[in-house]
Amino acid sequence: MDLVIFLPLLIVLGAFMFFASRRQKKAMQATIDLHNSLEIGDRIHTTSGLQGTITAITDDNVELEIAPGVVTTWMKLAVRDRIDDDLDDDFDETDSAESSAAELTESPNTKTDS
Image 1: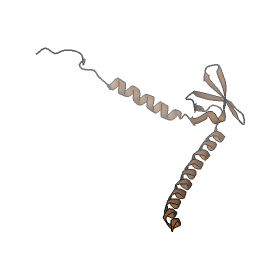
Image 2: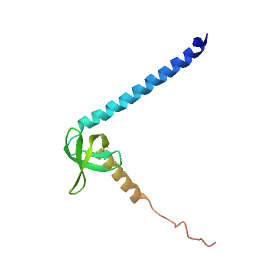
Image 3: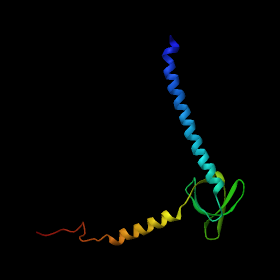
Image 4: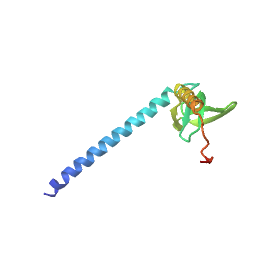
């Protein structure tokens, strides 16, 4: 009788664990695919937030140029994602267009006499 009460709970818990591990496996595979597809010249983010350009790749490490002439060595596991230059260019163009289109007609801190 006690087994009948706990059976639905066990089924729900088992399903939750199955789907959670499946999601984790997909994320891990995506990270592995990213690390295998890295090439010299790619711009990347590290897990600590550093941006750099790959100048050399070994089995376990990548060398990143973080400033002109400054090259540092990082583990491949520290690479979080690749920076898409197309998205950055679109953002810069949109940002500059919006800032040039903004027009200030009246200062918010001025008093108007009636």
